[in-house]
Image 1 (cartoon, helix red, strand yellow):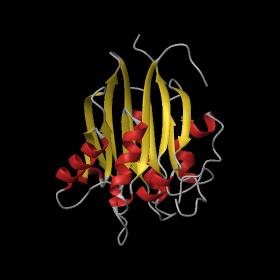
Image 2: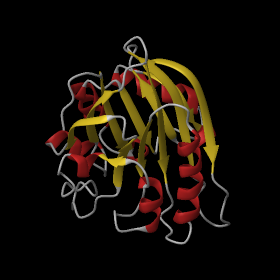
Image 3: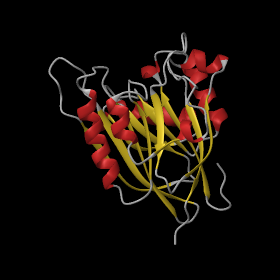
Image 4: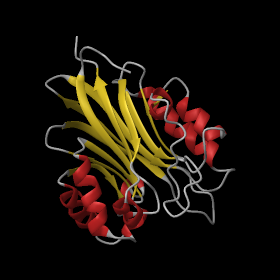
Length: 235
């Protein structure tokens, strides 16, 4: 897809597997992508999470915009090109005996006037839990006052009900670029597309990639999703 005007924005969505893998490769992967925004799943969420989040962001050449423990490991990181206007975190209701899940949101501006809301989440591995979490995530996406960029590890593929809920009314960046066959999980045995990036229809998807390199196979159990966008300019 192409568009004659707009403000470019490069976004990475990345489940970093709680930094259990090769952290040097992880930093190399993100720095090589030169993103404006990185939406992290499975980021720091426990002991010294603020310091660890800042250290992670610094290793990427970015700063922390939103998330961490209040959003249960979801992080929004930005370059200095992006100005953050407001942030919030969300926690989904706990199902006893299962992991807490949540979401992080940041309202931003770039290019002197192109406003957008970036949101990140990581839904449950439990099929009974996911639809309700997806509905809560979608409720807040729909309430955003600026065009939305939603990045998530949905823990299910495009045929699942939670995926359908989040995707409703938004553009699936992989589908928009005819690359829905690119699988995101797992790095050792790619078999599923469970990591997604959706955008407001006012945002143009210029390019989409699932980055499969020797470095990404060492850095996490998920491949990063890399998307180039054009944001609508302010009226």
